[in-house]
Length: 176
Image (cartoon, rainbow, N blue to C red; front, side):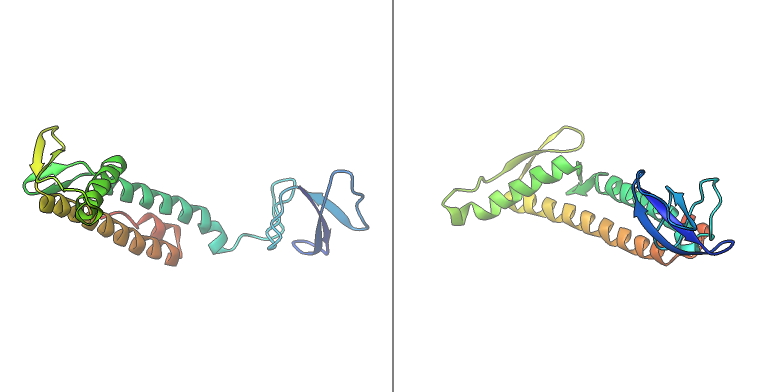
């Protein structure tokens, strides 16, 4: 998309319109291909008709830091959980499998199924552990707490990123 800008002196413009390559320019208009209608105009030569605001210049840094926090959150969640003296995997597939197992164990009696007296669940070291239904639900609860804690930390950090007013503040926000 191209923009036709009507300028009114150095660093100012009075109007803009989107146009195609075949549209004719009006009196005093010039073509720009890089234009933000909020007012930040990048001239063809690389200059600008106004400097970006602090918030505009921090926006890419904030987005990158939020993605970094998301990655750290996801890594924390997938870092495993200790339950009953054993470590269990908490990657997304392990959580999905555990969620399904806990849901079945809890719903089986009311759905007319007999719940098993124990479930073999493989720990992080690839050792099968026999868990009672209550232990399986307890493992699910431990994973739930890990996930919720990670999301609460991420929310606090993202709020701090949103409130940051400098690049140094943004860079200083890190996963604990």
